[in-house]
Amino acid sequence: MDLQHKLANLPAVPGVYIMLNEAGEVIYVGKAVNLRNRVRSYFQKSQAHPIKLQVLVENIADLEYIVTDSEVEALILENNLIKKHGPRYNVRLKDDKTYPYIKVTVQETFPRVLMVRKRLDDGARYFGPYTDVAVVKKTLSFLRTLFPLRTCNKAIEEGGQDRPCLNYHIGRCLGPCAGLVSKEKYGEMIQEVLLFLEGRIDRLIPDLTSKMQEAADKLEYEKAARFRNQIRGLQTLAEKQKIVAQHKEDQDYVGYARHGELACVQVFFVRTGKLIGRDHFLLACSAEEEGPEILRAFLQQYYAEASYVPKEVLTPVSLAEPEVLEDWLGGLRGQRVYLRTPQRGAKKQLLDLVMKNAQLVLDETRTRNTFKQRAVERALQDLQELTDLSEPPERIEAFDISNLQGTNVVASLVVWESGDFKTTDYRRFRIRDVEGAPNDYAAMREAVFRRFSRGLKEQSEGGAEQKFSDFPDLVLIDGGKGQLGVALEVRDELGLIMPFLSLAEKREEIYLEGKPQPVILPNDSPGLLLLRKIRDEAHRFALTYHRNLRGRATRGSVLDEIPGVGPKRKKALIRHFGTIKRIRSATPEELVEVPGISEKLAGEIYQYLKED
Image (cartoon, rainbow, N blue to C red; front, side):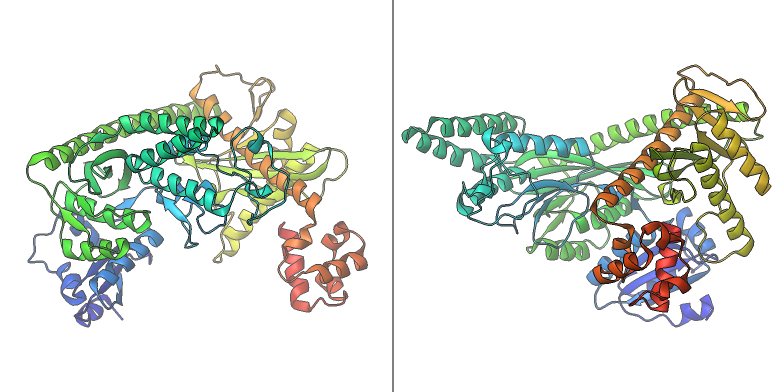
């Protein structure tokens, strides 16, 4: 069905529309109360569209739509699809998946407080998301100073009989594992922690003061001193919270600044009339994006993940269709939420301050990004000159080997592309042909050969799975002249044309093809700094894999990770072959001979062990 036919048959109902380009990529997702009217308006030449929409329409080759029961439902679906596809022409939170939360496991008998990266529907209380990991860690440290929270991962029930750990003896835990505190008493402390995280310190201090006095009256001076220290810490924090309103309501003040395709949204959190904190978020947008659209997109994406929705959200400009956003936010909060745009008075003054802070953060980010970009450009120019490339390398791949006295030999491949690490292209190799005495040369030969031979095969055969088909402009080998030599031999055997170099760790010597003596760059050379950064990342990735394998070897075997291989089949395999090494070298036909191993499962075991 062509595009014009789809446009002619759009239903006049609420829903979400999805624009695609010629390659089938999602380039824009939008919602509408009337799909027919909204989508067809994009293609009406009589309307004077903004430049962004003109460019968008030029790239639309196809469209899809999903009908919903209401516009609020469409708004929720729109947000989910934007997160899933990251469309080019939508306003999107940058790196939103990495924002941390503070989690209080209130569903446990004796709750813990910890930092997590994902919000689950598990009954716990979440606070955030936060953009600054350091702030989260500092908050957790402060909490654990004030409150003797348990930090272990034990599943503890009331009346435990374990021996208390060191934290109990130094007053940093109440010892629930040893039955030294009741569920009720521990729960009271958790309620105090929740008040703290909600920013309601004024409600917390009187209760702690009463407990301190009660402990003193009972001559429990050590306990009273602990309450005193908690009160002092909270009073110090409360003094930093500025009173901005007398009505004592919960509000979020949201402002923004934009330059080019980068926007910054600043949020001031006001709880019970006090400014308890602020945070900023960076968004990717088009250069022509209007302020209301930036704010609308932010509110959708932020509050979909936020742990708390206040009664009032204030913005510097009015948003389109505010009633839909209010209904959606009210559903999240469980009570009505108001979107307001103050024109004068104290609220307007605070919003002006939020806007000013957003601009300052954006300017700082742009300056930092510009400095980083210039440093990368200088580094790439250094490498271009070093390797006689016609252009600066866009993609650099690095290999490293890790082993312990010749056992569990592994290799890592990390990728640096377009100014940053591309973790989706990282690969790791379990070296098969090197056992016993350490042999980094043979291990490097195998890793390089497997990487590029697989890439050549994918390029020639095509197919949906293309894990190795992208080739680098430059290859970095961790090691000296010997490691570089074996890598170059593999390159030449495969008929590849690309520069290889190696970086020796001790003196940071750079070995180049055809040059007997190493090149030593100044320690502050941008090119050397970039090579070291990539080499260190390859070393970290290899070491992590090696440690995982060692840990797995002590806990069990590789067979434990194969789907369909339980304890009985594992025992049968080992009884039949004798060792894991012999199982690895077995063919599918030989695996089928083991009782309980079907032909299908034999193929899966064979494939898994070959890829591991």
